Amino acid sequence: MKKEAPVTRETVERLCVLADLPLPPARRDKLVAPLSGLIAAANELSRKIAEGARRGVLPVTRFPGREEA
Image 1 (cartoon, rainbow, N blue to C red):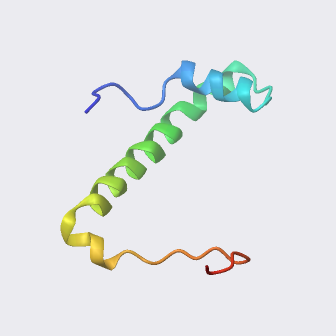
Image 2 (tube, helix red, strand yellow):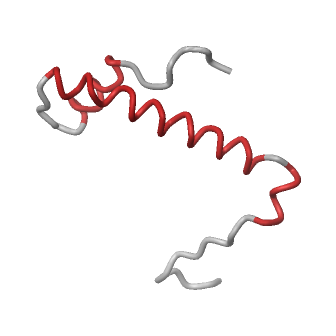
């Protein structure tokens, strides 16, 4: 497992470029901590869901508009 932060200033800068989101540097800096927290929480949830004991309680996802074969 990686020990470094999941989101860095460079990550936010790349995301802004890819999203064509012209945020000033001060606002980009303020995004690092919240995005890091969200990614860390999502990774923890993913690990919990992957546990064998929890596999039977996952909801079934259905996509409207797709026909059953």
